[in-house]
Image (cartoon, rainbow, N blue to C red):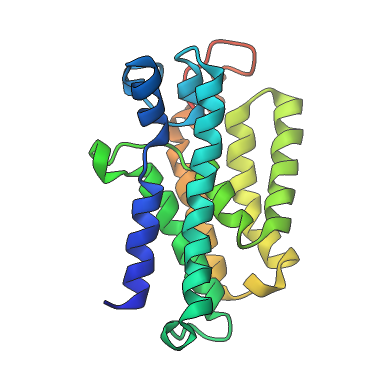
Length: 217
């Protein structure tokens, strides 16, 4: 098998594990897709009334992204002769590709008819393994924006937009046009998945923290 395809398939399958759906089904006997926005992410899991399951979903969704990238790095370290030639930073290109497909797996899981979550937690886990400093900067933006506006969705959107530029500036190992393009694609996907939140933000109808939510962040 082509090794790039192998990384893509493994990353997608890891990302597609619907932890939010599984946890709610196992521990509450419910379908989280019938709650709130119908999303399988931690925010919607919290709407089932279980903060513990929401936290577990958040952590596991991040870990599956981290695992996908860790697998790409492990493969590259143990099979250096089979790493595709993407230029001087081929290993990080492979890792960014793994991150992208883990995020796609979460958003469009084959097990749930391609209806998944928004990919924020999976992206955080994925990119912590590639550009941790940039993730730290993005999280700082998230915290400041949410504290100032009370809109988690706005914090997620802006943090996603900031991340690829922070990675370019702060993580030299990822400084290549191809890696930037892959990271930007991941960020753009997250922003697009927040399209309903964006509409509500523009209309002034988005609910902030402490109020009843009308959509996931």
